[in-house]
Image 1 (tube, helix red, strand yellow):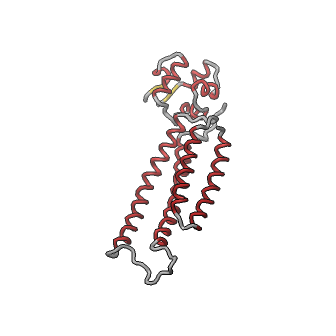
Image 2 (image 1 turned 30 degrees about the horizontal axis):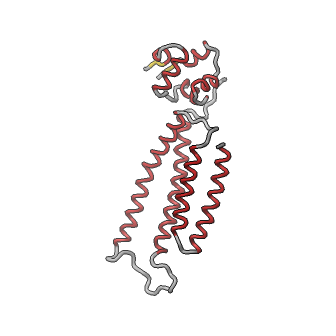
Image 3 (image 1 turned 60 degrees about the horizontal axis):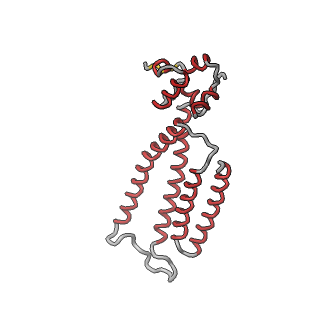
Length: 151
Length: 63
């Protein structure tokens, strides 16, 4: 598979995921987007392995590894800290999160709380993606990615 | 770690791109090694030395 074909596939899978998310919200079924996302990413991982027109040598691998490990170092601390905070809220009352006094009939129980936390997690993940890009740029510069020579 | 890749390249009249293709790495990797910004793996160091027909110590100088 060519690299451009992979990017095209990435875009299509992204659009399908957006559609599945919408469907999931409309049908009140989180399993649709959860399963769809795992399958979509799995498909992209498999497709990435079939790319033929990309030359990745040991220096490129080292840059990815260093950036990835640095991002993980920061990410797990942030994620754990936020999760600890959420656990405190969860254990703040004897039976977990307090429920609103009166709920409409079709109002999903406690789901909004989890949903908001999910949105917060996604924002954190987006920030982590930017952090990874930052580390990649740093290590790419360190290992001479954009250096020029007299040749 | 210093190296004499540039000297050996000049002796063999090779461009960075040509050497990179022979060693199956990118030109940027050869450039980074020459500039001392990246120390190659043992495997790549041996490949480079073998390609020029010399020992690793003749190409790479540990200081």
